[in-house]
Image (spheres, rainbow, N blue to C red):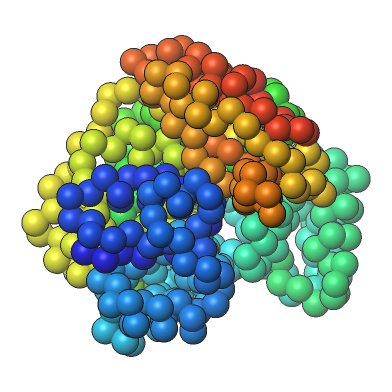
Length: 420
Ligand code: AMP
Ligand code: GLY
């Protein structure tokens, strides 16, 4: 089979690494990919939002199957466009991808489907936002309605933070749609399923370390590390989240004539009494959740995704998962998550991978004019390891981390430890 993966981050490196091991792969492409992905796939220099060029490539190169990594091409309708050309693709349509692309849509679907989630109101402009802040009080959460690459959510514990949130959200225009939400306390977990809209194949749960600093302090990021399994979610909570969050939302989407197929990611908040609320949906795999999930997947990923994309799910066997623990530590560039410096030379990846069970996925990397590997984005490398216990996996991952060198590199030393 000739397969194309769309994307260029650590998530897509993990996807390509796993798909390249499939016995059904004849040729694997990645658009645009990165230097790490080039070890598993042929890179195609097409940007993730160049939808026309991607469609043309898939048709001309007779690609049998496309897997979409990031949210941007989904929200631009890549799945609809490929299906119009009779192509098989794993991912949601533009309409279904609104579950991620619009926070107000997603909250409305959650309410209609009876899913437990934070109370919220949607406001259309700055004045309403200020009125709601006065009415609801602190703590409070503000969320930009559209895609914001992890930068549109403001959790505000004091007045200063709330004013900063309103200032940031309305800096471009006083008429922006914003979801204002009750603050929920608890531990987070990421529950991701692969689905054709009816059959639900849950992936192993994980949890993300969102903030840049140790002890979960400092600015929010796209994710500084992950572990799987996670102690934040019991088997019973996991099962009930599938039954009471995922399945009702899939039913509601089908009822609204926008059936969801692809990866559906529910961001969960588990409260002090064990109650599970859904904070948000993503219409894709998590990054860096994928990096730990796929390190634990023993089955071939390709037939699972392909048969779901065909809507032919009756033959799919439940995937086999290793009972090992997987850890991913994100090595970030100087300045991340604010202004990022690029072009720092990277060395030591091979040495890191000589530690038992360490695999380094590349995210923000490039090759410079001298042919040297250098940093090219905020989250640069994802050092992953598996082990029989969390201690073993963590020790291996950090041993790997110590062997990688680039100027300005920073990473959290507490991945796999408790979140403060
Ligand atoms: P979201 O993109 O909606 O998941 O929000 C990003 C992050 O903000 C989440 O992973 C949480 O850490 C935090 N967050 C979002 N909504 C809430 C909420 N209602 N209460 C507390 N924290 C939240
Ligand atoms: N790691 C969080 C996300 O992928 O949205």
